[in-house]
Image 1 (cartoon, protein in one colour):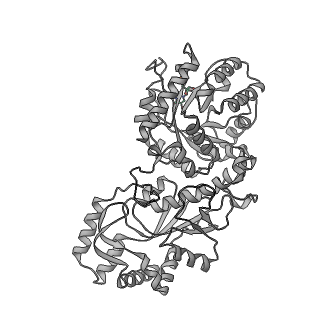
Image 2 (spheres, protein in one colour):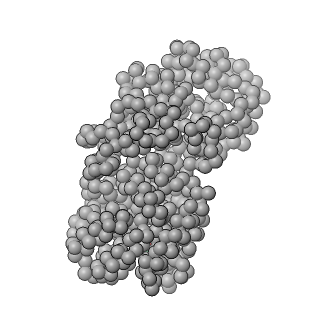
Image 3 (cartoon, helix red, strand yellow):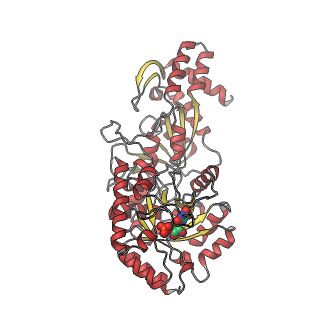
Length: 511
Ligand code: 5BU
């Protein structure tokens, strides 16, 4: 029997056992809906339950390789169990009760770093339950992972998703890229989840279910009209966090409304995790652009501003007396003051050339810079080439999505394509250099240059705004300040002030 015929048969049987109801129903999101789709009933009808599970499995993305399956508790658990046993696919269970990641297990079942777990869910409205499950699966392993405290964190599993090549380190984060749901209520979940890095496939949506029920004279045109009216008015759902007591809280989940600390669990990219933690703990989201001409000056500046920054940005090819000693000393300062280093090299050539520039030559950037900036222009071959040269070290790239300079040629379509490229390479792309909130994905950092409290322009195209504007209005996570600090009479005091103002703006944004 064709998929469509089997779906029709399942929908009609579900209707007969009251899996579809019409009336007034308050959904988890607070919306009052004229229709309720309730897959919980299938546990009483084993054949129907098996048919639902079979349809779910058939809708999985055929080009992706999954190493485990996890049903969102509780309704989807039996269906995930059927899929797991029929397909001989290991299953994981996410505990619903545990709120924090602590020492108690949040995920039951055995898994290893980089395993790609495929989520099964019954119904999606905003997608928040799938999101919570994805966060647990992505983050839980890492929190529990002893590798976090040692060099094992550098396991290739976390830098490239090539599962077949992995050594067997236990306990790192799971990849979650796809979920299959039975019913998409067409209220924004697919888009919400896409922004969080989870692609959704659905067996059925409201529209096709209503068509089936109408065709078979189970419902009337009035039913269809009332559901369509409701759907039209309530398409823009947002994902809400669910506190332990079950009541939705007010905070929506997206980059701008999440704290740096909460975002740690949304990604398994080790450098992003480290920087988010550092920013939260050190209470700074300031990057100083150390644009000075000699190694001594850059090192002196780094020592002075070190206590106030999360990141130091360099242009090493502007340092007249660069030697291999410079990165060594800078690394010592970074460790002493707890900041990371970004070389603003803006690679932009074919992959092979950029990779050579990155990992060899006088500067040997890959050996010391945690982050590098990259133009997306050449295509993503450049990203994979750089990532290969990073050779499993804790490294990443920031993609230039927009520039601060007047007359910059970047167009919105280009920026959107840059964001897409990062989404396709989350193991190496850590975020963006941008002037606006180019992505709401909490896995990515947005860093904004062109910040100053003393100038509005520099006479050569640079355009400045304040830390408050950059963070509060434009959506920067990190502000990049160069001359506002380097040319200040007291660079340490200036850095302190920029850091305080940028971090206050971030705290204000969270409110
Ligand atoms: P300033 O002195 O605060 O203007 O320095 C800004 C730094 O950020 C400088 O190192 C630039 O190379 C860097 N930058 C920028 O200003 N604008 C951009 O769009 C990008 C980088 Br990308």
